[in-house]
Amino acid sequence: MGKILLRETTTNVTDWDSPLSPDHKEAWQQWAQSLTSFRNIQVPRLYLDRSLDLSEDIELHIFSDASEKAISAVTYLCDKTTDGCSRFAFVLGKAKLAPTLGHTIPRLELCGAVLAVELWELVTENLDVKPSVVKFYTDSKVTLGYIANDTRRFYTYVANRVERIRSCTNPAQWNYVPTHLNLADSATRYALADIEARLDVWLHASPEVEEMCMRGVEPKMFPMVDPDFDKEVRCEVHVKATIISGLDTKRYERFSSWSVFVKRNSFLTHIAKSFKREGSCYGWHYCESYKTIDRHRESEMILLKQVQHESFEREIKCHQRQTPLPTDSTILTLSPFIDDYGLLRVGGRLNKATKLLSVSETNPIIVPKGHIAILLVRDFHEKVKHQGRLITEGALRGNGYWIMGSKRTVSAVIHGCVKCRRLRGPMLHQQMADLPLDRVTPGPPFSEVGVDTFGPWEIVTRKTRGGAANSKRWAILFTCLTTRAVHIEVVEEISSSAFINALRRFVSIRGPVKVYRSDRGTDFVGAADELKIETINVEDPIMKKHLYDSVSTWIFNAPHSSHMGGVWERMIGITRRILDAMFLEEKKGLTHDVLTTFWLKHAQSSTPGQSRLCPPILMILLFSHRPRS
Image (cartoon, rainbow, N blue to C red; front, side, top):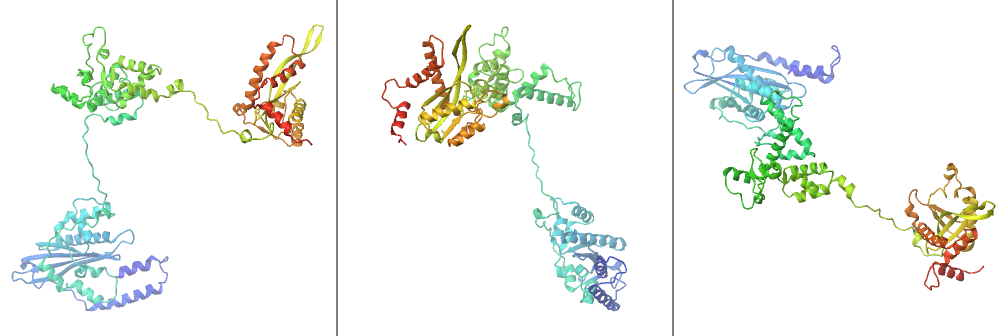
């Protein structure tokens, strides 16, 4: 108790001469005052009232206990006589402080059991008489389970102490005792009250304990308490052995190339033979000796033989027993046989043509369906430069491989081949988006128009002495996005002023326009200035002012999206074809007047005397119903 108090008082003290706190000082004074009760305590010099040499049956009973404060063990001697009487005497007791941190109660109880073993060794070494019976008692069933365990493994701390206990004692010597009958319990309690009574129990065992020791405790093996949830017990690991005959073909699926697969297997075969000392090499190493034709062929035979044994196990056993094949066998019609290498080959009717054909051609190796068949098909498909099914299948047969279900296997490999898809795949077409709102909304003609330029055409401007002077003319096409009506204006040059004049003529004839649409060609964007070419620049201040005054909006299509201007591109194509036909009729030189006349004739050629509804009729209806100002 004094050691416990000393440790508690010195734990929080920083200097050796620091004064004690009031609580510690009061506890220390109470403990010092309790020492006066030891004046009346007497320990007899002799264990018994007679010599131990006269005793016929001497037993040792050792009790152990532990708490968070202390660990203790006490030894008693029991002398049994022939008349049934017994004498119980205190021999040796010991108590010590428990570790401060990192120890659970089961660990401390195990340390108390180790202390009990140490006391037993000390007593038997110094006692002249050898006891006939030695028994150990503890009130911890967890400790008893640790000592009696023969199946589970412990971590280092518990394992070392259990080994220490079992090296000197037998699990049958350990017994369970209730806490109120455990004589070592009084030394582990930190209490100043009733110190004399507890000391008396320590030196003189209670009658209940003497009767228990005389009567004896029935031996019992205690199981471990919740070993699966005990942190001191290692996890139980179950190991199952699996006997594998040959190679595991599931590992073959890790390879995607037949040549690489055969090369790796050839290297492993060479290493395996090196460990068996079948050659000049020995042990694990890397050399070039396995890169030979014979090694390569041997590696192929090993792989094919393994897959055949998995797929055609019944057929191989029938051949070995020389019995007919089962009627439901998939290779029954091939008349198979086993060659000198243990491989199944196709029988056929060309067995006598060995002088003209090789064995691989007359009797190809049977390859079952699976990953090996896919690797072989893929390898020969690449060798024939991605040809069709018939050529690939012919290459396989010519090299001595008969693949079961080859038609489907070859077709599946070709169907999944990326290069074949690129070479022979169908042309893909982009799905077109919905038409813009101004293409499907009814409204007056030429309210929303598409604009584009085309040309030029060489025309004769004036005659000279040496011939005639020529110049160029361009056309600006305005297409109504609603009615598909067309208006064409001729310009003498590609410039903003010429385009604005053409635009004004168009608006004067057809009416105001809300929205203009065009592509982002160099004819309409501001980047044309950097190219130093004469273009119609919609972003010029003059053009912007004209659009602002006419309350119009100009919308450009996305770059490199010619399909978005299909409305006016279609009309330009039709116009060009009609003009080409008209130019063939004109034998003389083409002049500006002739060109403009052709434009007007083109506008009239769309409806020659027909009464159906068409863009010109819509224009007539528009102007006939338009209110006059």
